[in-house]
Length: 185
Image 1 (cartoon, rainbow, N blue to C red):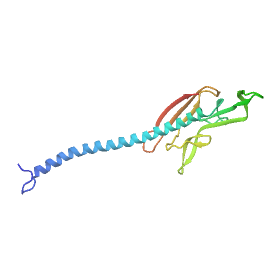
Image 2: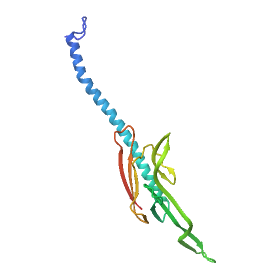
Image 3: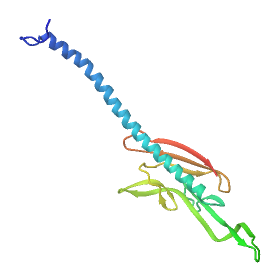
Image 4: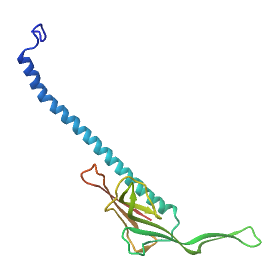
């Protein structure tokens, strides 16, 4: 039997084609649309994880690059705020008349040097959102960090544990992404 001949197609052939199309096309569309949705979700979550990694790295770099004597919670009883305090410096002085040097690692500074790490509200692109600040400068991430937390395991200490609870939100996600991290100093 020829499908196409001089008469065209039969009604049975047309109905069979429509039935098969009505069965196959929704399945193909469903697979395609769920793939696009999954791709977008993975893309957004990847960006949020990148923002979280960058935030944690910047905070850790501050800890490891600043020579602090102890860490304390902010004095203004503000939550999600800690300070790195440096009261001493290393001084190298030449001994008079000799080629020797004295090294004094605990020479007092005239005043304390403080680096402040805090989570606060900032204005970004005309909208207000939470961001981590290092010495008053916000860490530049695209995610909103509402309900995130920064905490210290002790009140005033030379050794301790910093806990980060990052809750990153994006309007394209149904629920925020929550990540926790801890590091010691």
